Image 1 (cartoon, helix red, strand yellow):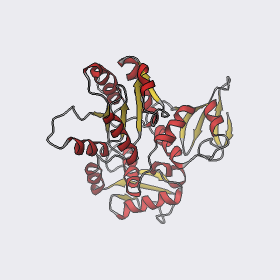
Image 2 (cartoon, rainbow, N blue to C red):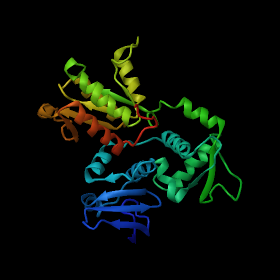
Image 3 (cartoon, rainbow, N blue to C red):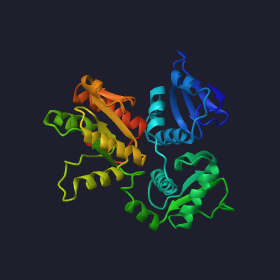
Image 4 (cartoon, rainbow, N blue to C red):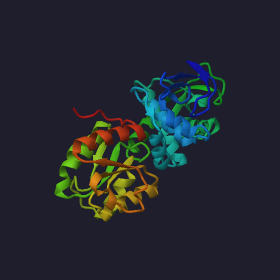
Length: 313
């Protein structure tokens, strides 16, 4: 073990454990959390400044109650392409949701420290994080403990969610930034029924999200309006381009335009037919529903993170 700057956020004097083979490094960073990073990933970022979105992405992965995530160069590349640009309002909502995630029960005080926790709000720095924390307090969504605290700008704050804050979270549960819904764009042909039911849907549910496909429930809305509304309400979008349906490309493009992460997949023997505008994205290539389920599940957990719902047994 040695003490060096974190390779991701550059916070000094963090615990670095190099595997004897040199293939992987385990990092215990006060800010980013504990993660494993591969040698190719380290080489890829050695001479680059890592953006705040990547730091926030890794921070949110390490906040999950799982084994430390393993960061590869492919994951970093996919993350850079898929990470959204959240608005000021969305960042406050994400921060409130992350405060909730740290609580064991309503009323419990949660410790937050600007220097360490600013990635929880996808903020660029401590100053932006403090602004969001203050805003949540001014809106009556959180309250600050008055014990052992002098000012709102103290480095460590103890906060808990107010009744108004819980109502706010419930009312905004379907906002894309914290939604547990995953929109699925794919061909509805009978040949792909097993891929939907036993591959894509199972992977999404195992990862803790709700799979939504526009033909999966009855509705009286115009189909195009319904599609756009549900994409807006989704945390991410799965676009399986097998059979090359134009509607899939439209829905994926709409999601990209909204800044919603889009995860691509395709049957291996059909990838050569993928449209040239999208074939530069990394696709999960599948041959059967079992393989697709496993790869898509891993991809969702790695890029999006585990969802709030318990997987079905």
